[in-house]
Length: 616
Image 1 (cartoon, rainbow, N blue to C red):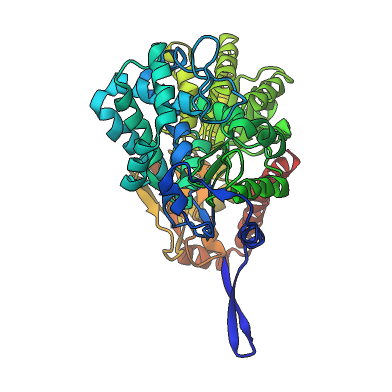
Image 2: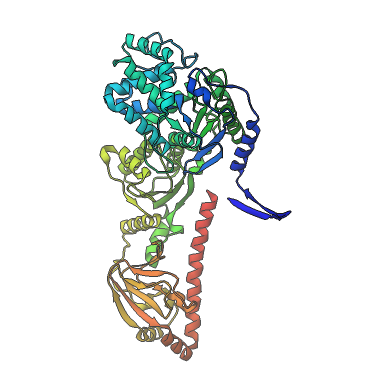
């Protein structure tokens, strides 16, 4: 958020009111004075980098990118590419094939060490030997298409096509004798099968891809977001590949500085001798920095300090996590207290008598193993209801492990005669898809898009099971209207004679929001819904109830009224009713008293709802 402060001394000043952006600016300003380290020169083209360049970018899970400094300056990705190509190899060749050739243990050596494990495999994919082996695996699977596929994948992580710096690529080829030695060593032990020069060209090419600090932040954020690009929303790589890449980044991404890094900073990261560093905090953020001044390990001096400052200031260490699992339940209640649907008195009596037969748990946040374990124990803390509703309206994601526990819980409840219902999800949502996948043999989930719809269905089940369901198409006598309670039979008959019987088809709009309030309607048969234009249901009404009654106090309709079924009602024009009241002075006050009681009842339910939410 930017604001313009009033002019002082004749000049207005624009200020960003964002604490994180302010911190990044302060960090950049402080570290700009840091001149330690040296530009890489073992590849001649890299020695041409401007040591003054310094950029910081941070991308969030909703695709916002904070940028400070030289975030649009291009440089070669170098070893940062190893993390993404490793994930690509897992995706294309499969874990078994990749792991047969490459280990996952830290080496403790420099990134370009010519040393393998005792079983003659590279230590991990973040050192040169492991990265060259990854290139070999991709060449085995894709052949000549491996190079374009690697570039395409790196571009997908960045969210844009990425070019190759041909000058750096040629410089890599001309000075790559150490990597050639590694390549021939790998060929000798059968780790790579193709011509060494061909495989090395793939590796040199991936290291020569041009990126910016902004690109790196979005690439890191894609890893942090489980393989989904935070801007486009497109899946770039599988969650499986992301988890394994982040694991090796955590243990080995910063070479022989990895142990110190995870101890002090605690973020999965990867550096490159081009001056870039990425860091990814799962489900929260991705960081990309650029400064070509390197330390003795080949890591950007300023980049290291950027990540350390962020982690320290905002408590981002991945192993320093705490959570209160109980916060995943927003509300836990029986439905009799806050039913969203109007009920006839005998139906409401059944709900009140059997209020524990229907239970609702409203859930929130990303659900993990620990959250769902708590939910299951909370469900088991009371006798099993006949209908259990789990609302996922505030749940964006559920982990596979959590879904497995919850799916088993649903199946166990139904085996004991309880009916489990979920609400608040669409069929294409990650939550519904994950839950459905974990149901045995693809069993169906009883689900509703809206919680109110699920509650209404659950109430109907309870009323039906206890023998009290009145058919909606049975015509209710006008004398049973709540709004006319307390009036004599003669007065009720006379009021009915003032009105006109109206009939509406299923799906027909009876009252339009914004229209003048000229009539009150007494519902005799069928069911109607009170809705806002966006489709949000405020209430459902059944025979014996009135709608449009706010016409008695307000001149404009505040909501739409729709016929959920075939409907019969009596429309009472207000002008006729007013004239009738002038001849029967007590009728108007009696009806207004009934209206006040109905509104107080609705307000009481709303207050109960608020108190339930605030208490959990």
